[in-house]
Length: 407
Ligand SMILES: [Zn+2]
Image 1: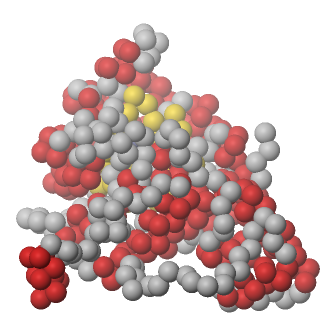
Image 2: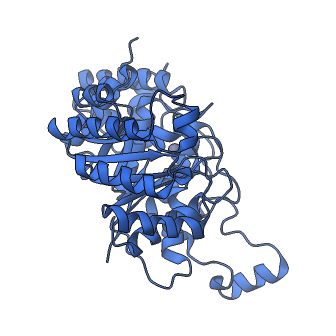
């Protein structure tokens, strides 16, 4: 049977959303956490963009050094030859190429510059260029696919396949789908194009997670693998997109006639760390009712609920908090705290690193890392986390590259 993979797009789709952003070092941490969690792929950058150049270089180096294991670092660009050329020049080997396919966007965005045939022509030229120039995996994104005529979408998908794409991304760009309809449409599309389908669902009507898993179901019924696009904590353009953890939980614990197989070897115990880090880095609190990691996800007060949960927690919980790496009993830090950061000195710095088990060989090495820690703190404009400090000490050269942004 076909399988389900995950592609997290936090480092592309979420960071492009209005009023929220991550530093390059924070984006790097997200890649590392996704890797640790066992996610297949991170849509990690706009590789053609100059301001991403050093971040891309540093992350590809980290991967070459074995820090990101098998995580696929894939870049997003427009399905035009110029973007693909620049992305390849940046060293990125895996690409998703995007172009709009709905009449709404063809008519009202391209304004007569492109028609349906020209869209296919432009996309094919970009895919062929990517293929001929050594791109390892290619996905073609049909933007606004959910408002695209199905016959045309199949024609578009077949053309993409002919040009050499590996997958077709079905973008529910406006969150217009319903679970029943997307399942049917994806099955039809899968049967028509016979290549793996990516589900990219937004949450404008609150159905992103339901649409993603129903779409994946449709892909599998149509005989192809499904790749669900997600973001951490569901953040993304406007009302966001399918939350990574919610999609995994839905596949594992919802009522299904058939059990669907997740191909990624996912370590759910990373969930809490990942969700909390992303919340911290974006400065966006996790809603109290967030599935799995919200403060109330395992809280019970009402008489009947508390009584039932105490007798057998399965009365009111579908899954266990331990599974997600939540430590509900962990006490908040109290008393004296020593931190290191932008204006820290050597003594505090060495104490903090000692707490996480890092000892420096010599003063020279320590002062080099301290210097980077000062810059990293200024770069993030936040106190550094233990894992960030660990990354800085482990890969100082790559961290220096990643943090270097010069206009
Ligand atoms: Zn999107």
